[in-house]
Image 1: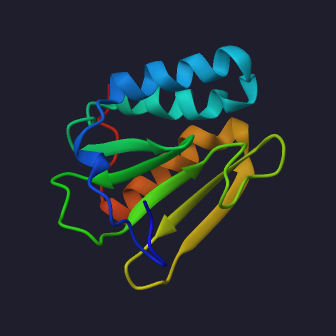
Image 2: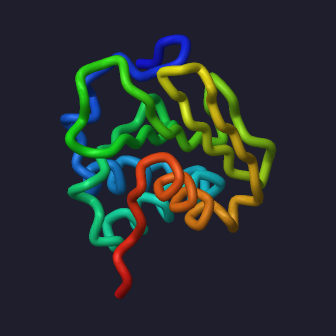
Length: 134
């Protein structure tokens, strides 16, 4: 759950990236426009950084924070789902939003084809975490 500017729930302690992938995979089977979310989750699993990033879903939005997860409230990066109740991207796009504890949020919307690259840009800029080279 989010407050005005930050995350105030402990759900990030409980969801494994493979569980998130399975959950979103069942949605993509019925609604392919959610595919960028599973692509992002698979990139985290393949990145060698899944132990350094905690994630969960809030309805269908993807919520990410670095580990160890601090006590709430703390800033998060939200990847908005096509049906997000808070701020849905335009059709064919991905919207990624940093919700900071200071209220100086960063929001970028790009074509869904750019979702994985945009996600890692946020991870590098906001959390200092980049995928490991293969």
